[in-house]
Length: 266
Length: 266
Image (cartoon, rainbow over all chains, first blue to last red; front, side, top):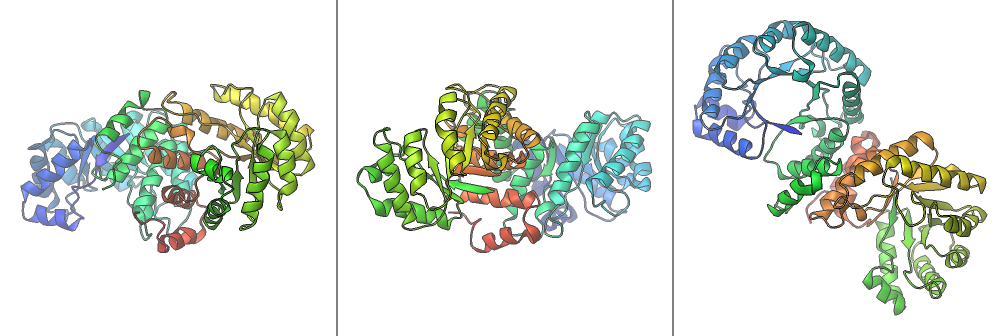
């Protein structure tokens, strides 16, 4: 289970402020903490207007790479910003993201292919998210046809089946789980990823919804996720689910984490 | 998801003492609290020697039925105690349990059939628990042949796939999940149940193991479990998992439980 650390995201107020003020210490601290918590990638989202985005992304990348060597997840829908950013990173990045939208595929897929990147592919076409798992699979099949045509190996594609909030559709999680199982069946070399925060939007006790969603998703085939690696309950959910699914030989990771206080109350 | 309240069990020291001293107030309190917490059945296990067991069971049943009308789960391997106990209950009980063992089937199945009871069937034959899911399914197939022959409808059978501790076999949970999925496939009318406490035996942070085991098991098809209905974390796990599996229309049960403090820290 690989974690994409979500915290360096300019759509968050405090991060936006740090970007605007070029507060390198704040960003460096977020990078260091997420890397220490075991993030496999650090997501980098400048969250700024297209004209400003390349400069901001480069500043973020330089700042982060000044303290950690964790690979980055370049989070932008802007081909111009991405083509500048892939030149600035020291390690091959994950590109976040493409979708079934032709414009996005045409703009971003060549960058992914040229730099041998990994890429997140959202199961949506245009601005609408398909209601059913079957319709999402159609979109995913279309994307996979394009990534294959561009020479991107299936193993470099991280499919995000999308999980909308349960508060507007109580089947949101089951549609995501069904899509995950279908992807595992049809594209066994591809990976799965998901953003954790949407599922619980508008509900109380969001942390409970997020942590059990993650556990059930891992059982359905999820092997990476965009989340806060500093969240103790989320880390406990991952450790325990990996244990229960037989992926922790002799329970050693679980037992060691427990000794380090992973399951103690805050 | 139906709960079999586990607390009135004479193998627990404090309960054994209450039985020995005929401390009705203690037992009545355990019964009332579990019923209030929504238990569908209350398990009743005298935990005493065969000669003493019928008397103790009858006292327990009378004591419990003095305060609640929740159906009982008569927990005994002793046909004599069970045949007395089924006469004493006001509502048709669940019998806990039969197994593939011929002696147990011959002694208990006629009681189940004669009184139209529901029955828990353990996926074991003799004293040994089969290592693989396939072997457990063989035992279950044998039991189902016997229950059908005795005229017990599949819908009255609660199959317990058995979950041994992960600390001696890290595949214990996946074997149980695989067995659950196979039962759902082959015996769609039958129910599934599980005892929650074994899986985490010998491990630290047992409560985490138990709660995520339950969530993953519900996703694998579990529809009842023997557990402590007063455990807040377990109740939160059930509420959240049911929500995520699309079984809580308009999220109402979850939202109401949240308003009542179900997700607050102790």
